[in-house]
Amino acid sequence: MINEKFIYLGFVLSIIGGLKYLVDTLKGRAKPNRISWLFWSIAPLIAFAAEIQKGVGLQSLMTFVVGFNPLMVFIASFVNKSSYWKLSKLDYVYGVIALAGIILWKITNEGNIAIIFSILADGFASIPTINKSFKNPETESPTIYLFSGINALITLFTIKTWTFAHWGFPTYFLMICTIIFSLIKFRIGKNFSGTVHKNI
Image (cartoon, rainbow, N blue to C red; front, side, top):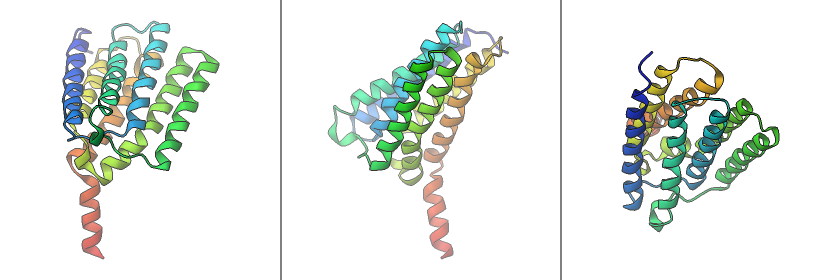
């Protein structure tokens, strides 16, 4: 366990990663999937509210910033019309599933259930970007996922009370950031496709 003040370091890293992605979006270097980024802003902010309701302290700052950054990227995707990834019908399906998770949380109105449904909503909203990162990693920027993942890891190391409200969202978020960062940075999909074509 490390001092809670390290959460501020994680917060700053997430902001830096978010600003890098924001600039890349405005310049058209990154092409965010709007379904993912919209629900990546809504779901964590709901989880943040639920964590506050459940008495989570400074660790909830991580959940807040991972909702705030996507909101800024989502807005930026409308500034440069060439900077967003065109949506498919399947993207909308995942968006509806994510929305359903949010509605179910609202019906139950219980903190831990809110966090569970926020994770589910965020996870389903991640599928279009995971798919895009696998097939077209050049349309993504890895820094935000790296720094956000480090933020989640720092948050986990600062937890003193291991309740689901404390560790649930950071654990999920570390996993999803690791997956997307790896797909982008190591171009796993491109390498996999190249290997398959060579063997055919």
